[in-house]
Length: 168
Length: 98
Image (cartoon, rainbow over all chains, first blue to last red):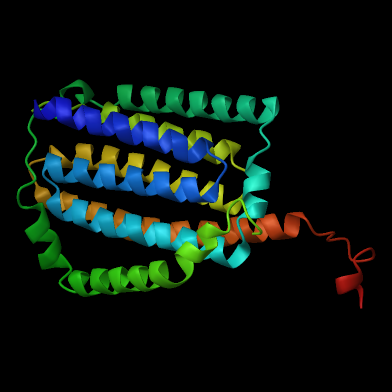
């Protein structure tokens, strides 16, 4: 059952990621990035990396804030107009590059000894305490990032998004 | 529980597809971030099965590296997008000629 849930989460995050990279609106890009990042955080938590999952939530929020800031500073109309044009050449280039990378990865993984047995003895229960032991300042750093993210989202993020489709 | 690391690869490929097709700094960085999530998930599944959890600390450094790299990529792509529209020929550009 847990494996089924994990695969469902991975599938949903892949679908959400696909929407994020194919949509043309900056608002939807950031929203789908948030969904993808949060689903991945859920995945990390479920597989036993609770600490990494929490760090990833903050990373996702900080990433969305960074994108919001950029969008607010440099406008959304140019981005929307530029991303709205997809030629056949773009598709050939994108799909070709993806197939090439996929083939390289499949080949590389097939060369790893015992790859087919990976994932059979999963145990990461001590991961969080180990990270805190090695990097005790981490909660402080993460707290600062979260604070900055909230401040940025509350001030400059939303007004920029509201301009999409109007006089941006 | 059996979960093969290959299941985390589609997200990496989707990010790469986006990075190959996007035209703006914002789109490029979103694609990089999504590819990064796939890479992190793959790395987590690789590290996670090992008996020594100390190897899991590598993931945190991965995260720190990703944050720095994303910011740098955003700046680089933004500059590329900005200067891509400019005429950089010295003799023809009125802004930089004098």
